Amino acid sequence: MPIQSIYITPGIAVARLGEATAPVCNYQWVDVDQPRYDGETTIAPAWTLEVGPDASITPVLPDAVEFRDGDKIRPVAPFFEVWARTGDAGSPPESWQEVPLTPALLAADGLAPADLTISVQASNRKAMRRTGNTAVAFGTREPVTLRDGDHTVKTIDGRSPAGASPPMIPEDNPIPLGSVQLMRSLAQPTDQPWSDVVHLEVFRFRYRPATGLFYGPPDAAQAVPAQARPEAAVRPENAFLDPSAGWFGIATNNLVSPGDTYDAVDQNQPTGASLGVVDDTCEVHFEATLARAGAGALSGRAVAFVAPPDFAPDRRPFLSVADELNDRSAEWSARNAATSDDELDQWVEDFFERVHETVSLFNIDFYRARAAQLPPANLHPDDLDEGLRPRPERAMGGHDRLRNALYKLAPVSDADPLPLSKHARMRHRQLSDLQNLEGLVQLDPDRLRAIIRPPFESESFENGNATSMRMPPFMRQSNALPLTVVGWQHELLMRWLDKTVASQAAGPSVAGLDADRRTLSDSATNRRHAVLARLATEKL
Image (cartoon, rainbow, N blue to C red; front, side, top):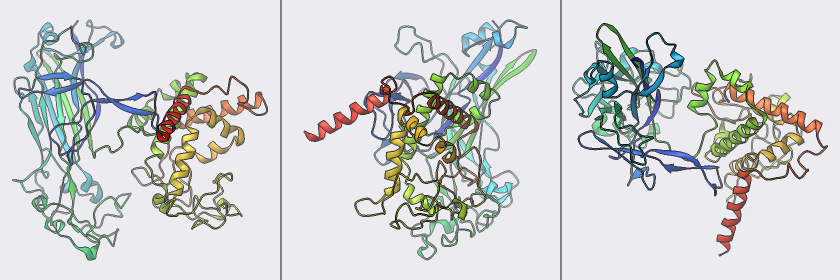
């Protein structure tokens, strides 16, 4: 069947900076029989593609996942594949088949590998966003092009825009933004354990991000202890940016929120002038174009977002890129409505497991510095902590009406330096089991509705530096407003809450005491076995 369209998969990928030569292997989150004390999942190696000197690839299954080579962090360098949708002329798109785009498929359609072109463009616009000045953005001026027959590694240079006067980046010294390489198409075997999951014939390319360096003007290579810069911000060899280009010395706090996301000349003045530092993160756009004589060209696009290393790869966040994309889908409400009660229970338990894994990484004692001064209506007359903890009238203090009155929190001590973090991990460890969550609803049906912040909600006394303890407490989104769950997550949570409250009202006066409901869930059973096994080992 003829080719009707092409696309690049994955459509969105996250590449991660790293200075090591070898990238991180492919891995996936998996359920385990012996879960960690601070989460339900761990990671396991998956089929990984090793690239040879001639750009050929070999699938391997590593024994372990390595994130460092000595003190150098391994980058995450994603592969992209070009796929096609095939179908009879005039057939409806829903009947088209999705297949790898291969030389054989092109030949069957009267085309050749030379008809496929992949163009790559990268840009870093952080300084531009902070100043409103397009001259301090940087990236590729012309696309880097990949074509069949050329399998060399192609560097991606970040330069100042054409016509910038003066250019922030010297013309002869661009900032590296990674590299890209087209892999060789190889014959597909059918007798290998990976034959059903790895396609060697498909047109495939790899993007490798930069190493994770900072660049700035000469002043940024100087340590100035009096200005809270005990060490240089950039290496001497990277201090070549032009300070007169429009980024160094510019006060940007009134142009972007949050305003504390750039280095200032004087760190004692966080709203002061920029030190003029940039990094080698970027956004990379890929476009595959298939030229067809006598017919319109077909194209497909993808994007990679380059980010710092993931220092908690085996923890699942409660809010992911996939969750954000789902929230922007027109179908999410219909999908939520089609979720059965059993599926809803499973989703809620998994969600609270993810919440616990996030909490296990979070130093709440430190971030309570963002606790807002509460208005009188939000204060409880009695101090739950009996004066033992500071700032009782701020969020999460002893007078906070949102506090659970059953728990008195300990002050900081040598034996307990992080009491808030310890308590949060304990509570979310409990609530990651569905039965304990149902028990909380039984005790206080309104608790979850009051404590979980609805999407994008911000109270009148909150700002980018001060929030209430509504969940998730003291965390900020990219514009410094309180971080929240997304719409479809909140809808499912409230639907589960309504279902659970109604079920408990119709059931026994004390829900959860009958034999069937006291049966432990699989995850709770696994945790019980893990704790008992750990205790037995400690006794030995």
